[in-house]
Structures are given as structure tokens and as C-alpha cells.
Length: 179
Image (cartoon, rainbow, N blue to C red; front, side, top):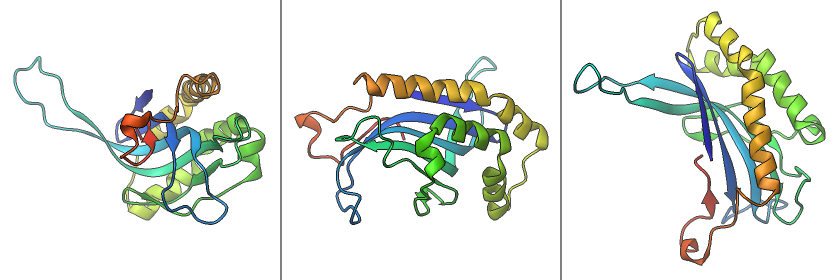
């Protein structure tokens, strides 16, 4: 399942995720599942065709990420929940674990979307300026974004999303979802 909230230059992309690292660091063994949320740069591409043609919308590089993950063998624990305050192109910086994410992920996410200081720091690091009105719009959409995250978490807990790929998919990196 994929949700996209688009603004002028930024967007929020949310997806379910099932992931098994083929080369995990010690202590990170075992498959993970949960919800991934990324703040990304958005781009409207040039429209081709007639005046009625749709415009391509591109969800580009991420600048901030949160992974509300748990080990598959420990459902409901959020024992792998973390965020990436920095991204390097398409690659995440180191995982940053905080007790508040595991204790109350919705409260933690709501506070981050209301504050946006980490997003603004990532924009500053990239040398990108975003209009304060756009940031205000992102903040105002926070409740809808959080609602989408909650819906995904509910469907994951019911076994409807973030499922292990079947045998036909065993030859590929074990990762489902959109992100």
C-alpha cells in the first residue's frame, strides 16, 4: 500500500514494508516489517501532449525517514523502530533509535510533523529553501498523514500487509511495499 501527500516542493510518502537484510549488523538479524514514512522532494515534470494531458509527478530523493519497524518474530513490539534524520542521496544515514518512538510512535510522529525541525535541518544541509507556507501546509496535514500511518499499522497487525514474499520471490531481496 502506498500513500503520497504532495505539496509544492516536498511530499510525504508512506508504505508498508517487509525487509530482510542479507548482511545484517550484529543484533539486527531477522526480518523486519512495519511502516516507512519519508519526506521527499517532489517535482512536476513537463507536460506532454494536449492541454488535457496529465503531468508526471515525481517523488524524488528522500531527505528524512522514519521506520516504524518490528522484528517479524516479535509482533507489536516496535523493537526496530528508528528514524534517519539525515539522508545521503537515496541512502539513509545511520539508524537513530529513541525510546519515545517505541513507547508511543503516533505521539512521536505527530510531534515531529508539527515541529519539522529535522526536516528543516535536512533542507538546510541540502542548501534548499522551502517557503514557510508549504511547511505550514505540511504541518496542517499532519493528522491525515498520521491517520494513514495508523491504518497501515492496523492492516500489518492483521497480516494483510508487509507480508513475507512467497517462494516465487525468494530469488530477490526480501522487500515488499513501495519504498
